[in-house]
Image (cartoon, rainbow, N blue to C red; front, side, top):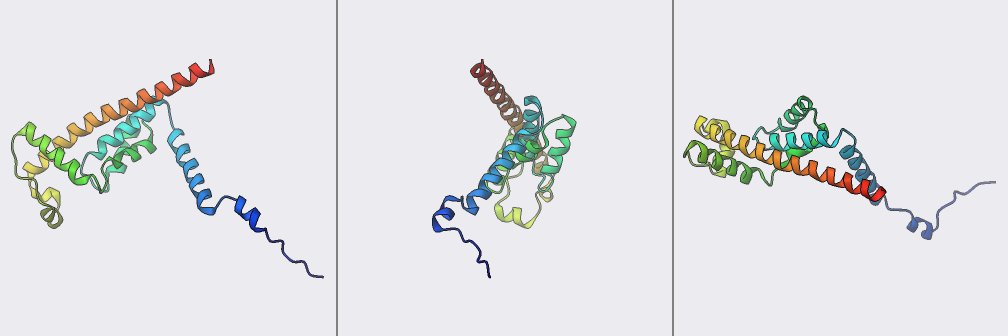
Length: 171
């Protein structure tokens, strides 16, 4: 006597969520867990602020490491610190660093012209000279600090507002 495997009917397989939807749901759950797992509102806001601050600097490849290290110093959320560095990404590099350089020029006075894309591809940014690097770093410091205060502070206010709403609804 042979036993044949039971195969689900077409209607029962339609009811099961697709593998794609299950993976998306799992990813969403994991991201939400990471988002909320570490710290108070202040710690989470400090982590995001540190990430945004470090994301404004042109330290390619080191931004996440530096932001997590700085988050440890200020007791901020490490996950949000790493995520905050994505304020600079392949779509925003050029406009962000151009703006940072222009701000540095505004504070320190005119410097060399911002290099073309071709010049940036041929030589590292630091090889373009101290006058350019100094202006870029000063602008990055100012933009990073202002962005960290505004976005980190705004995130803290949002978290506090949500908590107050939850307490008011439960009362």
